[in-house]
Amino acid sequence: LLSVRFRRTRRDGEPPLINGWIPFVGKALEFGKNAHRFLAVHKEKHGDVFTVLIAGKYMTFIMNPLLYPYVIKHKKQLDFHEFSDQVAPLTFGYPPVGSGKFPGMSEHIQRSFHLLQGDNLNNLTESLMGNLMFVFRQDYLTGESEWRTESVYQLCNSIMFEATFLTLFGKPAHSSRHSGMVTLREDFVKFDTMFPLLIARIPISLLGGTKATRDKLINYFHPQRMSGWSNTSGFIKERAAVLEQYDSLGDVDKAAHHFAILWASVGNTVPATFWAMYYLLTHPEALAVVREEIHGVLLVSGIETHHNRDLTFTREQLDSLLNLESSINESLRLSSASMNIRMAQEDFSLRLEGERSIGVRKGDLISLYPQSMHMDPGIYENPESYKFDRYIENGKEKTDFYKDGQKLKNYRMSFGSGSTKCPGRYFAVNEIKQFLSLLLLYFDMDVLEGQKPCTLDPSRAGLGILLPTSDVQIRYRLRRS
Ligand code: HEM
Image (cartoon, rainbow, N blue to C red; front, top):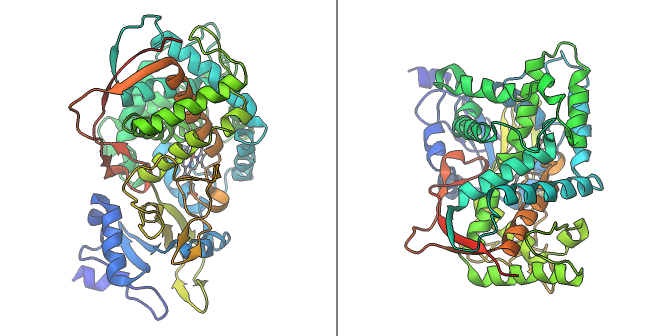
């Protein structure tokens, strides 16, 4: 009875409405189990635009990528930050930025994002290279050249987590490494496992020890502790200065903001690095081309690759690694499942192509689900298979992809879309390039025989790069140069 009483009914001009049988919950369980399949089935039944009740929210899915630009350009009526400002504070534990208590903070934060891009990327790239080599030398480059074994996820996680941390946040006063890095990483993984539940607004008090773990992680960034760190990136220094301007923000709130940036900077980058490395290792022809390309760039620059020598890659050199970049983009296409969500600021009619428009209600969420586009055989031939050079044509980056004969404006959306596109995307791709370059220059590697192929774990669907359901073992040894 309740479900009939409170159920929303479709108005004229609105997309087909799928309420499900359970009040409030709606289709949340089916969606959560396998979002990609759920959306494909409903697209088949209801067409390319439909509204679904998911955990109390009405979400309108735009399934045709040719329609994405119509959503992306409505920046005012369809806002990203209102939704993220409802969810991120609950997840990371800081007070909502747009609550009126912190005038101008959101704009200040947005302005700081340029410190991750353009010329600022040069310093970040150089600093990361030093930190990557440092972590590799400490933990993996022992100088012995016999075969050793390691798990790929473990390797990516331990190196990328620490090197990214050192690059963004800097190093402690009297040491090159932060004490407790292993515990920090383990706590981060515990928190990250609960991340989908926190984003679904399950109160943290219901999630066992998650609150205590999050408090520990936040405390790592206490302003007093951070004030002793050196070599901190311009980006983090600027954020700290912005946070400092607000007296109503306590020290723990400031620390929680920094913790959120730690999550943004490694939460997706580590699994993305895993998939980039995994696909190369399981496709020897791709590995050979990419390795040769990296050697070629260094050879032209007259750089020696002995593991005791420091290596530097300029941004131009990294940009010239076309095959490596295409292979990374291909693994991002296969592993990313980020949902782009915008919240309607008013009741309005959203113009789609030609004469077509749909009615949208204030507070409704409009969602783009790029995984459906990434796996569309009408856009990508054999979308399930890894083709390392899919994004190269005539020796240049390939940027023309078509749907129903029309060129797509958005064909790869692992980093979101429009004005809220991930500000760390160039840094992230450079990081993965640098990590893989060092790995391929220093080591011979192959996957141990008899292991199951890695598959995607759908439990983080909608939230970014999917994790693998299992890890994979490799053997590696120092290359003789
Ligand atoms: C936002 C993906 C790495 C910082 C986002 C969004 C996505 C994303 C999908 C939301 C955009 C939207 O909905 O329109 C990724 C992926 C990464 C990655 C796949 C790695 C492979 C990074 C790194 C940093 C970073 C390394 C920082 C150093 C951020 C920040 C935001 C964001 C600060 C929020 C932007 C805002 O509030 O407007 N990222 N990201 N990301 N990302 Fe990334």
